[in-house]
Image (cartoon, rainbow, N blue to C red; front, side):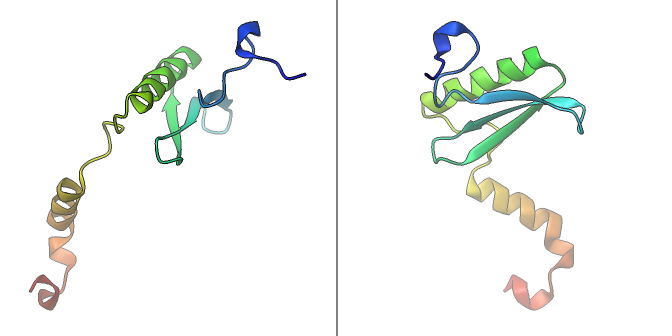
Length: 93
């Protein structure tokens, strides 16, 4: 029989997971966003990873996008500013 969230050892489905990344020397938290894509967060401690995961899952459940995700127009403007010197002149017309 599968364990449930009431026994303190397992999360409910859709609530993410937390583990120690021994190669990276940090803690990782992972969850699925509103589009079904897997998102990974990093933290220095387990408590911080748990906190960041709960904030991200709450934001997802409320329909908010992650704050680090810029709007397409903002991202394109930033990208163009960073790569303007590498583009050939005919590409700017």
